[in-house]
Image (cartoon, rainbow, N blue to C red; front, side, top):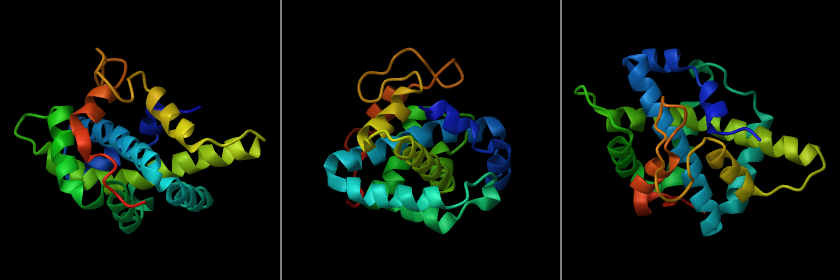
Length: 191
């Protein structure tokens, strides 16, 4: 099963950086923080009764052409995804993510993450939708929670608890640190 690292490698960082008017290192930091938070938010929504809604969204995105460039991304769809995942707390989530993901150099990472979330959300749902379709076509059972947990666990980080020693750019992402820093903000979306 693919993990966060595989998903991150499919996001065109250079194009994203250009669109946002930031350097690639800043765009990379924002994406490496935003993507695990999106998957974690999706997982939290499933735990809170939103599995049927996410299941439909994954089917929809699996049927669409995968985005390969930033220009392929439907930002309106991305904004809807982020609103469904985080409810009215998008700005709070972006600020919390900025605090957990570092930043510095005078860069408003929270503002950048707020812009990155709707741009990467269609990539996330497309990848998850394709994984769901592949598992269903192979004749295996489908476990939405297992799919999301597999993405989070496949990154080398821990999905829920303490942060380990791995940092972005250091061989793995600190998923536990990112998600732990969000506290009660994850899963504030619709069911």
